[in-house]
Amino acid sequence: MAVDSLPRRSVVDLLEARLREAILGGTHKPGSLLPPERELAAGYGVTRTTLKHALTRLEKSGLLSTRHGIGTRILDYLQLGGADLLPMLAAQDHGWLREIFEARRHIGTLIAGRAATRRTARQARRLEELLRLVADAPDPDSIQLADVEVHRELARATGNRVYVLLTNTLLNAYLPLRTTLQAPFEDATQAWKRLAPVVHAVVDRQGEDAQRAAEAYLRGTEKIMLNSLEHGRRSSAVDNSG
Image (cartoon, rainbow, N blue to C red; front, top):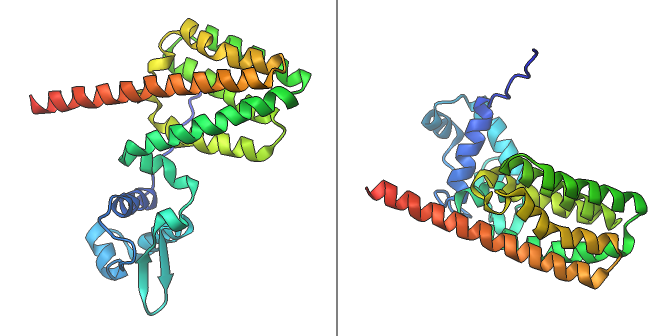
């Protein structure tokens, strides 16, 4: 049986990640200059060519600005950074997850209401199919990923491609951490029961009901996930202290 090879992280990938962590973690402060390239490359044990590639990526992310004769300056990512930074920020500081989930709740509620008034017959059928996949999913990871596809379809049902991209942005922000956020998806039947009112209201074209159901669903799963994350953090702290 043919097996796809796993992607390997290049030296540039690893260096980019290390530098990004140092910037987002506060080791390099906004407004400060990075050490000269020769010194920085030697410190990380890489060539200057590798360093330049990593710095170019970080510059495109809005973290750095390089000017000839001056050097490479750290920018304020809250002023100039993009949504592509959210996964790294969430991984470094779980406080970001609360803000991500707050945005998820507000945008998701709005999307549900729009979807109820704009969905097509085909999209209604697709939503019902995806909801059944949630109920039939065999394990927590599969349940969570099936749930995600329902939300993508809800965004598509609005007929507004910006909502689709916003949904993708928020999902991409926390899905890399999904193994620590699977508490609402441990039981397929319960996951289905939480999500079904949203889908049914959209299918029935009940905009206000869809918004109320989405608000309840998103707030409820947010609370479960954050409580689970906090419990895991406390357990880890106890284990480490022992």
